[in-house]
Image (cartoon, rainbow, N blue to C red; front, side, top):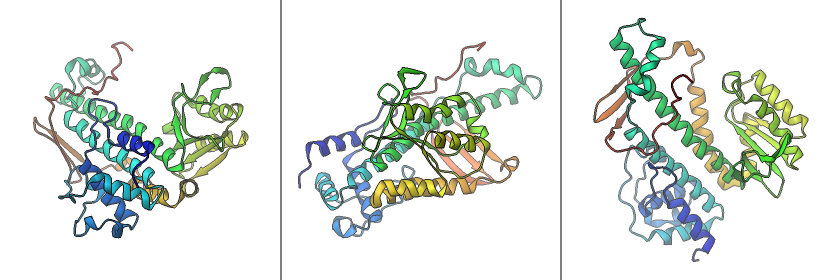
Length: 353
């Protein structure tokens, strides 16, 4: 069956490059690979005999490896067949495409994030000058700033990725403060950003990976506690989803704030069960493969004693940056620093602030 206008529009948005200078579009070949991955995930390979004999690499091995030559079938024919077999396949494809595009973008960021300049890091040396050799301190400051920059960029990109994927899987949408129906109870002229709105059910979701003193004890804790009040006074039921079950006084306080306003709270295994129940069987598979399992593996790998972190060795030259942890070659980043990065870090505060 030919695609509807809305399906064509959704597909175009999935393929087009996103915001930012390092964003990349998805080619028809990229999308064909994603359909092959979905055929495996959803046990629908019989619907796509074109992939017979093609050994597709793991999704999470990309973009470090390249996928093999793919079927010559027209991509749109494959896509129409994909959607005809399972209604939620469209959402699955869009979320998988979003994740793939973001991984490709971050690979470019790592390749092109410029090393810091002395103008950026120089004054910071006053805090430790004389405690080590001047040469060692200068090098340490450059490494420290570059690692901060690439981690800051990872945080930015994850923010654009994580909540929208969860929201899409549940059949909802994330909304900015300007577009949000949730208004601040202290000033009804101002809206609040919401991770996910389910309009028909009048549910407003706050998603969190973990709530701890370290993560939530800075800055806007009062606003965190006000969120369920703002939801209730705006006619929505506040919903809190915390993926990690680590106990913490801040988590207890936040749970109490939601429950006091008649909201529901889902923590740890109950959070994943709730997401799965809201997503339905097809998108529950997506969440398990591409969100739940990777996060669980990462959380399980965190050492109990963070004072015993392993040794890390980092090196960089004009062609490559490499990272080794406990003697394990971890990562090699092709460097193209001469290519201007239009999205490069701009978070430095003015001197004296």
